[in-house]
Amino acid sequence: MGKLLFWVFVILVALLVARIAARSAVKGQRRAARRADATRFPADGMVRCAHCGIHLPSSEAVRRKGYNYCTLAHSLKGPGR
Ligand SMILES: [Zn+2]
Image 1: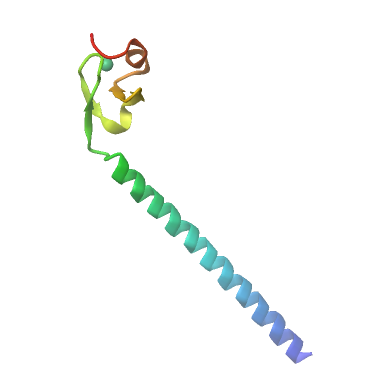
Image 2 (image 1 turned 180 degrees about the vertical axis):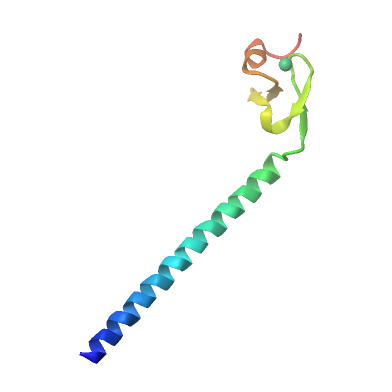
């Protein structure tokens, strides 16, 4: 009986360790994905609206057909004034 309790305890500990390891692995992947996004779209990068010419942070820009725009309305009007 003591042996059975011992093995139940060992299995429970193993499951707990596996769960903690899986959780930290997911966290690491999320952190890596966030870092990759920051590289692709620098938070401090400024872009110019192709319609009106105002500068705005790249993270707030509307992208359409390879151009950056300040608003959806300007993206629909297209490049140029
Ligand atoms: Zn604009």
